[in-house]
Image 1 (spheres, rainbow, N blue to C red):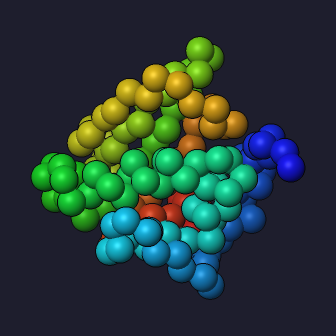
Image 2 (cartoon, helix red, strand yellow):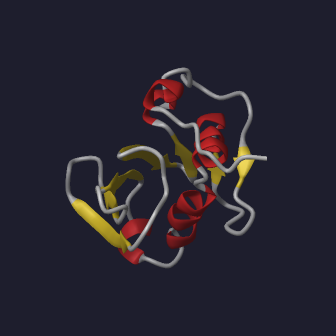
Image 3 (spheres, rainbow, N blue to C red):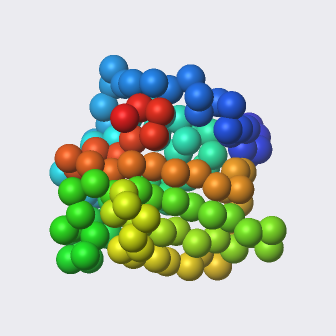
Length: 122
């Protein structure tokens, strides 16, 4: 069994909708799509889904945004910044991640109507 993460940006282009919805195991109000599930499985990123889903009921500024754009930017030293914007480029929330082995330099998600999805699935 290998722990090698095989996620590439090209892999994500195949997701243009979803037929299967996944419910977050802790924040049961949050659903996510097949594309997000693919990122979690192939990028070792269940933690990333958790970060987005679990902040929803606890941060008033985040919860007040009906449409959220989440971005993970991974730096060369493997530290990262997770940021939430309001869809108009206004920063709502940010968190520094000390270390990640996430295989992409960056990824973006949308969160709306309690659903986390890839931009191509919107």
